Image (cartoon, rainbow, N blue to C red; front, side):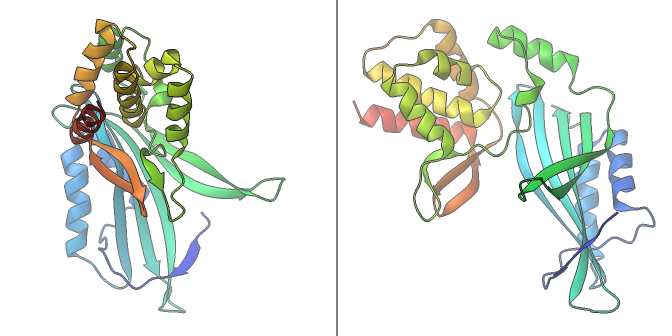
Length: 270
């Protein structure tokens, strides 16, 4: 496997296991206990050395539907070069998990991200699958989603963490992608698009949909009881959504609190 070398100065934690990191992650996922996986990562911090350390970040942690949570975690292993002590190799892995209400891992996929230069000279992101569970997602989760939302569950909507809810992002204050789409949908009274977002499992799209529905409601447009029922379901969702506000890009805030913020702001506009 190709290694990438970079200078680092912050030591997080290290591993004393004789297993390769990817093998250890696979074993923990197959064991099916998310708490054990998380606690293992935390315990590695205590055995930190300059020769080897790890970093991990939870990019996504939220309910798809009551009782089932999607998680995306990146794990990095840094090993100090023997020739140059200021240089470290980097092995990076990404975990996609579906856990149930008892934190049991119901489905997983472990991948190794890589960059590859395309024919146009631009670098493209790829993910090589190292291991995955037999099922993409629990059948019960799909059935519960179909029953509640009244639409067929689409696996491709899972694990989306590059959509941001907010009004402006970055130093230039440009609106995030779906803010632009929302404003366009409101101007055009495009309720079909807004409803499609609401009836998807993607929290950020649901938040934009709730804002759009409430703003159109202020303009006299009415929505059926099913729409308002789903808004109530979203307002009870556990977990976090990706947000941006000015220079604070990629911040995570509780979905429930964001729904309340939206409702309060729209009411003030009346």
